[in-house]
Amino acid sequence: MPEDNIDHVNFDDINAKAISSPLVKHMYTADPAVHVFENKIYIYPSHDINAGEAFDDLGSHFAMKDYHVFSMDHPDGEIADHGMVLHVDDVPWATQQMWDSDCCEKKGKYYLFFSAKDAAGIFRIGVAISDSPKGPFKAQAAAIENSFSIDPCVFKDNNSSYYIYFGGIWGGQLQRWREGKFNGQNHESPTAFLPLNKEAALCAKVAKLSDDLLNFEETPKDVVIKDENGIPIVQGDINRRFFEASWMHVYNGKYYFSYSTGDTHLICYAIGDNPYGPFTYAGVILEPVIGWTTHHSIVEFNSKWYLFYHDSILSKGVTHLRSIKVTELTYDANGFIHTIKPYK
Ligand code: FUB
Image 1 (cartoon, rainbow, N blue to C red):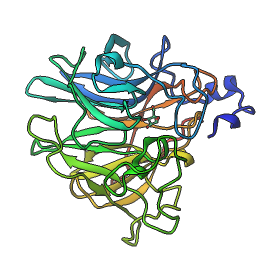
Image 2: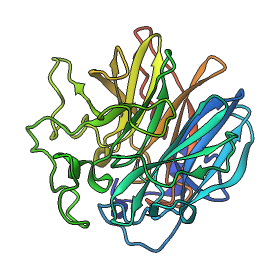
Image 3: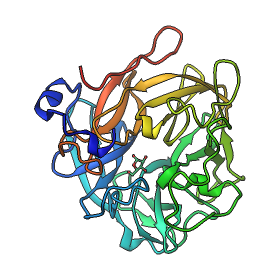
Image 4: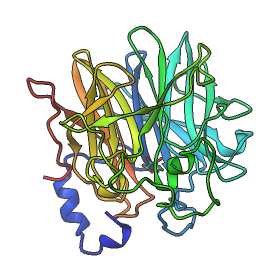
């Protein structure tokens, strides 16, 4: 919901109705990417701060500068803050807006993938490496070659190939790359360059990563989401089209691509047979939370499934000051996810 639309919200009431409490209260955290490493839950969130930037549809108010890593022995347990693990000043190519990140492990090394703006104000995706899931991470000198847009999600498939999903429209700039180069001026309207409402929606991107995980092994492909009739979702279908926040998980051999619908504030998902798709739209995972953005990850731990997400209740509705939360996620007998209402 837009930031100017929360005046009517009674935060004590809505807090009492919330199905989960903030996991972290000593700072603001968002966009939780969660993995089980070494039998523990590791959380790689954005670190929200109040940098004084005004709210706009390009997301300038999300002016984050660093990342912390958190861990838990169990989703109901205590959370440990492992401190600051990467700062924008230590990333040679990045200048501002350390947005969503994700982490994966390969051969005992941990790779943090993150989105940030370069000196030209263009979002790129970078990699930083550590010997521990707790960090600290050391950034590569340059962003991934030919990377663009935001919200990386790294997925290790059964055959041990690694895939990166990414992209986000409006402030995430995905629409600026439709011709393979960055179109327009830096502060172009967030809706310029989008397809028409009746045209196929812009898709998230997916690419297999190179063996060292530092490059795209192929030109990124579209993550196509089709409707129940096999027709790609159109841009005007704002309750179902991709906006940002890609996540991939596998359940019973099927590939679940989940994402945010942005300005309609839903976490939705679509199911496919392989990491590339196409995927068929399957429903809503999470109804709107307090705050404009919604962003999540889905992880299995001790044979139960969990949805990590965020809302802005702790900051009393400030869109860029969010808090990560967790709740259990369940499936029906046909593999469809039961929709979660964040407030009872
Ligand atoms: O945290 C900044 C941006 O807000 C993320 O990249 C988006 O997914 C949204 O959550």
